[in-house]
Amino acid sequence: MLNLKDKIRDIPDFPEKGILFRDITTLLQDKEAFKMAVDELKKITDEYEFDLIIGPESRGFIVGTPLAYATGKGFVPVRKPGKLPYKTIRFAYDLEYGSDVLEIHMDAIKEGEKVIIVDDLLATGGTLLSTIRLVEQLGGEVAAVLVLIELTDLNGRDKLQKYNVRSLIQY
Image (cartoon, rainbow, N blue to C red):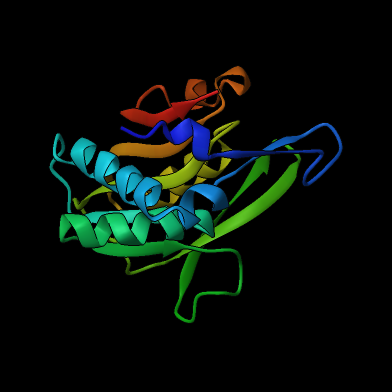
């Protein structure tokens, strides 16, 4: 069995000095590792009842769309401002190295739908918490939050205590 952690490349001082970036592109280009990662996330989804997969821009798309396909569910993108063509709602949040805004189509989730949010990384929790807030504003319920990588020393999980958070790889 592959060790997925071995497929992650460390890039120091990206995007800013002092940040150690965990690069998943090396995992993605390895067909066996990528398939294994999606399969492992799929196994986790089997534990939950849900209607949709939600993925924040942009690496959440990379992980979320094959997972949506594997689970037979629809996929909803959460994007940066101005990227979605229909009416949106938005949420501003802080990152480990700045701030940002996310948007979702206002008709993307129906009242009472259960979703699984998928992203590549849980760091400080800002992106995932913002995505949760967008889902909840639309009346959705978060069944689980799944990530490939969790940076445990940044304590992002603390912001998500009310939710089922699962990660495949921890640093």
